[in-house]
Length: 294
Image (cartoon, rainbow, N blue to C red; front, side):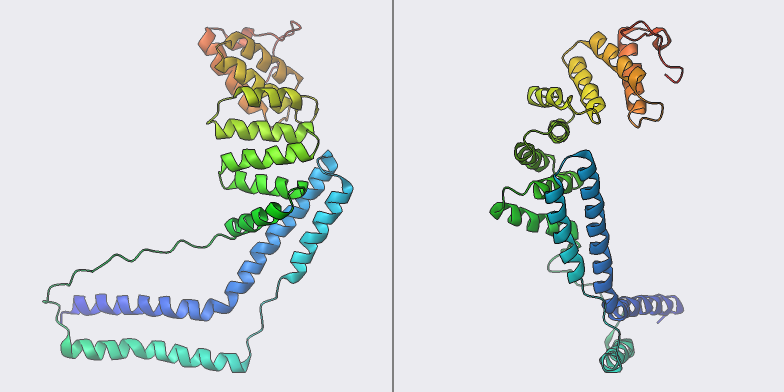
C-alpha cells in the first residue's frame, strides 16, 4: 500500500469515527435543542397575540385563552436530564466499541483488501431522509385542532401565518378566509386575506382581492397597504396614470420613516418611466410638489 493511499484511508477513518461519535456524544443535547426551539416559537406566539390584542384583531377573552394554552405547552416542555454515572457507563462502552471498529477494519483489509480490484456497483441508491421540520408538524396539529374546533379565530390566524411562512399561499388564503368570517370581517384581517390572495395569484390583484382591499380601507393602520395594492390593480388594468397619482398621494401622506415608502417610490419610478414623465415634476392631487425624499 502506498503512503498516499494510507493517508487517505486514515483521513476517511477519522471522519467516519467523528460521524459515529458525534451523534452519540450529542444525543442528550438534541431534546434540549428541540425544547429551546419550541420555547422560542411559543414566545413569538405570545408576542403575536399581544400585538393582535393591541390592534383589536382578537378580543381580550380570546387572547387570554390563547395565552393560557401556550403557557400550558411551555410548562409541558421537559428539561434536558443531567447525565448520571449510570448513563455514562453505556456511553463509554459504545465509544470504546466505535474506537475499536477501525482497528478491526484495518486488520481485515490488510489481509483481504486490494486497491487494484474493481469497485462493485451499488444495487440501489440510498435516499437521504429530509430533516423533520417542527413547524410543519405544528401546522399539521393545528389543522387537526381546527377540524374539530372550526370557531377558533386565533387558531385560524396562527395557521394562516404559519402557512404564509411556509410559502403555502393557497392554504394561507383559505385560513384567512375563515378568520375574516369569524372576526365579523374586521378590516385588518380582511386586508391580510386580500394580500394572501395576491400572493397566491403570483402578484396579480384579482377582482376578489380588490374588493377585499376596498373593505380593508376602513382600518387606518393597514389602509396604506390597501391603497398600495388598489393602485397596483389600476396599473395592472392598464390605467398607469391613475396608479401613479395614487402612489404619489400615498407617498405624500406617509410618515418619513414608513417602511412601505421604498416600495411605493419604486412603483412611482416605474410608472413615471412607463408614461415618459419626469418623477421630479410630479405633484399630489392637491397640487403640492412631491416630498424632498421622493
